[in-house]
Image (cartoon, rainbow, N blue to C red):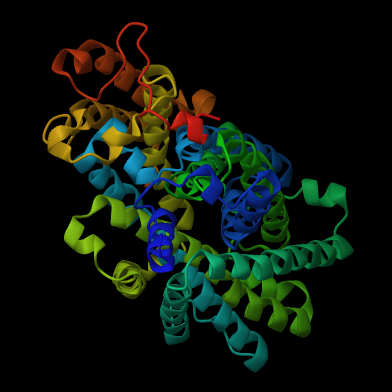
Length: 492
């Protein structure tokens, strides 16, 4: 094979056009755990910890962080990391097995275009807020949360993130290796300044910043829901990260070390900072916590650190875009696709800058969708397909594949998705915080995940095989991959 052809095939696998063979994957257990940790301690942990402090004090907040993250991360990882890590398949290509080709495109639009791009805008605005607070600290002028510097800084951050994403995963790994340890140092410095003026008992006794309800049980469960949403918010990303792992075990367990463990620690520090400094905005902490020198260094670095999360979001989103679009768009150059993808977050920054101050509302809305998607994924892969997916069917033309379902859509999965979303909003409305008594016992994400999974499982057993949809196994039959795939290591 010529070097140019070999490089072409490597790039195709790297960008999700073909499955990654085990020999082509780059992460073992600790490599993926470190990569997860680097992502988890990105600047969004500041936002989530700050949002938690609005509803509960540190004592309850730590419980909410641990409970919420472990639940969300485990369910998200089971539904995406295990299958993608086993087969090396791009996440939205894998979704064809449960939603169909056109259905996976719809899920991509919902979970990435409509929701994930909001993350880019939020992190970009956080970069702009950091620059605004830096100007406040240096020039001793009042902060302007919606001024030109915030908007300009956000747009600049989006452009820089696009330029880095165009360079591919090697540049992403290099940036993560630099940024993640530096963010940990900032967190340690924050804890140092906090502990100088507050004992542990005083910290744990701090009240919530803005509890909306007189009933502390409701406030606590909202804090738990925010953190479950934080765990589920990884759903659109970690499948495409785990396909780089050597096997499915390596794709799952490091999530508990990295995404859960590192994120929980970072959010706990942020919870303490927000409670003691009286603000849920992380950029304000850097200005208030440690004086001029620390503030200048921390704010400057915070502006830069947002790039890590933004670049990873862009990279995984564009990989998914290449798999759900027509062949004509897939032939468009990588850099052009990355640039086009940035149009949406730019528009959000320009026209909806209030998304930053209402961050927790945006975050919880994402869980209304992601929790249902996780439930469908677990039901389909573990209980209906028995952890076996036919790769040829995944990549076959729609007209010849049993994954064509009904016009490329699986109505069963879509009904289950709607059912999960509706029960979420009925139990807990993220926009108004209206909730039922059931919410204080079960959250909203867990009923959504469970109902979506049960509806998908039940309707598939009742209808899919009758219509010949999906290539599901019948009786004791196992839907084994094409000959030779297991010998190459996909089932390990």
